[in-house]
Image 1 (cartoon, rainbow, N blue to C red):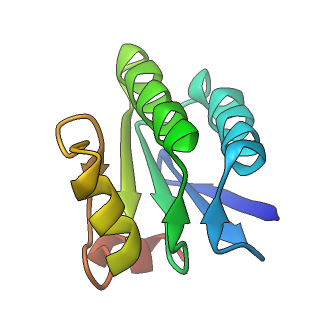
Image 2 (spheres, one colour):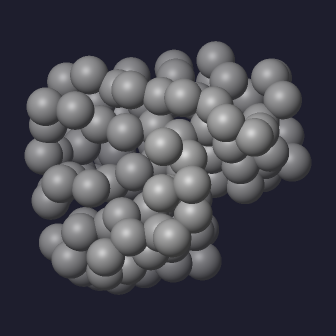
Image 3 (cartoon, rainbow, N blue to C red):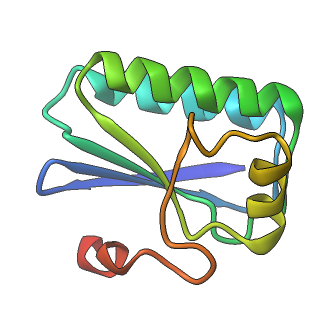
Length: 115
């Protein structure tokens, strides 16, 4: 699993490569990547869930923790390009209030501006 990221106009965009699942190891790598950038000049972080079809319960906890951490740094953390399967899991876990989900079911329009 690789994470690719880039910053453009105070927005960090993180994308997963080579994985379809977010499990503990992937969530830890994501957390390290987000924390690394929180003290920089980012105002928004988009985590691109394109092709992610499964997120385990512990990883949802990490996503909520990251969202709260970002909020404490006045940074907006959003999930974008959420697959139907991942969206159903978010819905089942009742995390809509904790996680900002953008771009369901197709994509976040602003994402194309980041490329």
